[in-house]
Each structure stands twice: as C-alpha cells, then as structure tokens.
Amino acid sequence: MILLLSLSCGWHAGCQSEPDSGQSVVGRVFVEGAPLEHGVITLRPLQGTPGPKVVAAVRDGEFQIPAEQGPWPGKFEVLISATPSDVQAVMSGASHEEIRKRASEPPRIIASPKQGATRQHLVVKAGESMECEFHLKWAPVR
Image (cartoon, rainbow, N blue to C red; front, side):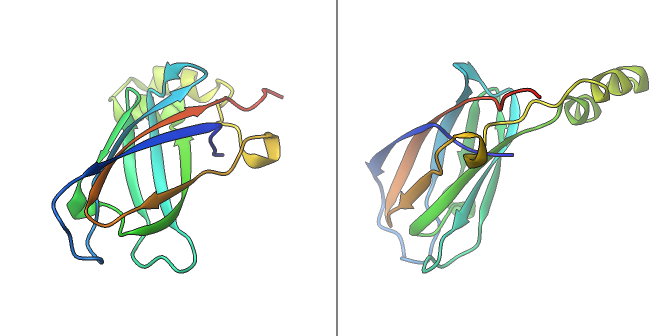
C-alpha cells in the first residue's frame, strides 16, 4: 500500500529541455521520522500529462531519477511502497532460514488514503530539476 502525509519539493533551474524530455528528480523518503530502508517510488502521470510512468528504487531513504529516465513535464500522482523484509533478504543473498524467518514477520505497510493519508501530486516543469522530501506513516497494524 502507499501514500504520503507531507511532501516538499524545491525547483532548481537547469538547462532548457525539450517539452517531451525527462526531468531529473532526487529526494528523500522518511517513514515516521526514519529513512525508508528499501522501497519503490512511482510517479504516475495524471490525465493530460504525456509520457510514461517513472519508477525508482529507494535505498536508505534516498532516490535518484536521472533526466534520461525522468518524468516529462506535467502532473503526477506519487506512490511510495516499502519492500517487504523477506524480499530484502532474497535481494541481499540471505540464507533460506533467514528468508523463511523474515517471511513470517508481519508486513510493514505505508499508510494509504483509506487509512487517513493524503494523496500527493507532483508538478514537473520543463527545464527544471527537482529535489523532494516525503514524510510518511506506517499503516496501523491489525
């Protein structure tokens, strides 16, 4: 699940780009004050915004999307999800025993709009790189 409680972005003037070329986006992701260890950020274009969705890895609270792979100018919905601990174990080459142990842990899920979080949008402008910071909360454990 997904979503954000607060977002701050700064715009930095850069080289002029074609309107249909990607823009660079860098940022940080925090969940309840701590950097998100492993996750994924997705920028999904909203109606009227050309170009593909953009997906990037979040590692130790940071992500980087170079202009060559970045979003085209327009408005995007921002989705952030945490990587489950068992998947992290597989990615790090952990033993089968460790993977099984982590698979039995309850998943940590980032709060969604159904759980009171606010939908976040990002406006990407041509010729400007962006720096963003996201502050999220974990969903209540059931």
